[in-house]
Image (cartoon, rainbow, N blue to C red; front, side):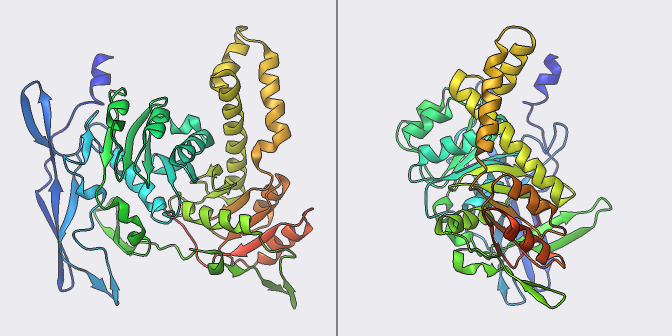
Length: 429
């Protein structure tokens, strides 16, 4: 057992070169391996790169773009000097905790993919396995973090929390109440590092250029996918086309000579949630559906093969996370912990029934929420799932031959549900 635990802390050597050069036509991109000086044992400082890759035993390396300005088809790609995660140095590693591995840094990067579109208000993004657990914007950073955490306390355990504002002491006091692997922010107020030092293994990261995240909103970078035969697929990174309510397209479809339109347009609050939700969608693995209410994620469904299935999974998650949040607020314990205590005769079954009844009565907070889908609905069944739970507005790309059915489902709802098109798909694999 001791050996099994040790493999998760062991910092591997890697045999990747110090420099990588990629030639694209007449442009050469130069990448330099990023390493950090660490104290491997008392008094012994060594220089190491990533702890390991996705799993112990997998060598990995982080590379920073240091030279080469790429322009393809008139599109200028992100160039050197705009470093975020890849530019992380010892000064940015305020607290090492355990030496960072590949997933720690890709989780932070996944949070930045979302945060770059949400610069207007203090925002917290909690990521686990490169997918958001909870995202919230508010007028106060601590409130945003609390709401993001309560959106899915269970999944947030062991995740990475990223912020678009300097972390203050109030937010730090909330952070130490949870187990996180990484906290990333543009800066930290005086005394915050000391508060977070109570968490022994926490990695505390300050990223330069993070205060300029909005500049990355429309910036393209090269996105590589490696194939198992050694080949590569290269694509442009995606860019979010929805920055305000004016960017949505009217939902409209024609079928057998009849034009279908929603009988109701989104309210101002619904538009705000739709814009927020589409920004979050940029960082969610497809197929995906998510529900948002008051700029807080209510339920996030990820990586499912069918759209109605992921709509149902997102509802299921909304109910289970809502019940857990209620249980934690009332009894200071996770829902699953209370359920186990009831099953073992250590707690009154009435306590569990009370939580379940309240969750059902509140419908997990879904009434009035908006639904975001990263692709169109091939059938109306996914829309029907949301309508049944009281969702009031829906955004999806549009373009299905059955868009008219989806619009019809919204119009048949009581009260009617608003729908808009984004005009772009947001697949992420």
